Amino acid sequence: MAPENNDNNIFKFKRRRSVNITLILFCAILLYVIIVGIIYLRRTHTVRYEVVEGALASSTIYRGIILRDETLVGNTTPGYVNYLAREGQRVAVGDLVYTVDETGTLNDYIESLSLGENSLTDKELSEFRTDIINFMHNYDSRSFEDVYGFKYSLKNTVLKLANTKLLNNMNSASESTNSVSLQYCYSGNTGIVSYWYDGYEELLPEMIDNSVFNEKEYQRTQLLSNQLHSADETVYKLNTGEDWSIVIPIEKALGEELLEKQYILVKFLKNQNESWGKVDLLNNDKGTYLQLSFTNSMVSFVDDRFLDIELELGDETGLKIPVSAIAEKEFFLIDENFVTENNDSYTVLMQVYAEDGTKTASSVTIPVYYYDDAKGLYYVDNQYLSAGDILFGTHEDTFVVKDKASLIGVYNINKGYADFKQITILYQNDEYAIVKSNTAYGLRVYDYIALDADSVSDEQFISQSK
Image 1 (tube, rainbow, N blue to C red):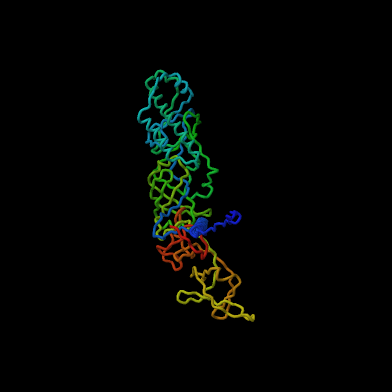
Image 2 (cartoon, rainbow, N blue to C red):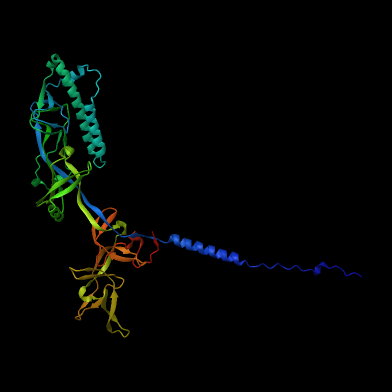
């Protein structure tokens, strides 16, 4: 008899899963790379800067008041004044400057004339072109009042050209001019014509004080063509000399230093031209003022009373570093009698307490960041001393650590950590500073410093990037 087939005797075993070591290692490495990448991206990286020798042009900007030989010319005959000389034009003795319409009928006569179409000559167009180009190059949004000066200048130029054409027509139509009473006024001296005045025409250098620089109180009167003027009223101004000067307020010490130079190169910010100015120093009980005298270029600024200038005081040479690398740090001031120097190593004897509570002295090595030879003081980092520490001297006298002062410096990163170095700034502008080289506690050429002083701290390990 055949055995009976029993399916219940068949057992199914679970398949045993093998561990994939390669996959585990790959995931572990990937996780490690991700973590390191996140840490790297979140870490502040210090950009280094290599110290090099360089130079910067030392210059300072001032705003000064212009002094020149100015004569106010009064009207001789009351009436409507019409200018024929262009503002800024040099006139000689006997040149026609303006006319006076005594009856006020000149405008009516102009309207009655049929002059037809008229075109400007090349010379007349050149006058407009010069005014417009000068205004475009010299415009400064901070001095919006210059727009009004430009407006008046153009208006006077237009009226001058119109009056010139009118005179030509009147001379050719003499029969019609009997109804117009016109006086011709000529220059009695040689000079540059201006159609404005401000009351400073007779200002002398010895009269300068702080009040003349108060532009909020400054008032200027503009003279326009076809305006009614009484007799003896000012109708124009004549600048009779080519010599002129600018006076600026200045610190007394700097003024005395510049006086020794006798001449200074001056840049006029209005047109970027340069000229050498002779230096004189004015002192009174109100302050110190520097007078810079010139013998040319007066006509370029005949429409100005105040002028921005830049004094170019020469090139400062030394170690050139970015301003962003400069930091300020505070230090304890330690009397030199309580510091011992031995082979560029500095130590102090500090009072400490033993385990049994007795007082004793301990020698502590300290780094010195600067030594003030005049005062006999060492600048010591506050990481090594604390306020209230007592130091012993050579004659059993004591010194209490308490006084502090700040130093200007940079963070040297040659050794892989931030080490503060004191610097002496010779000159500085918005981007770079020139510092003194080869100082006892300062920088050397080719040192590496932190480009951004705010990104590092004392003794910080530096993760550098170029």
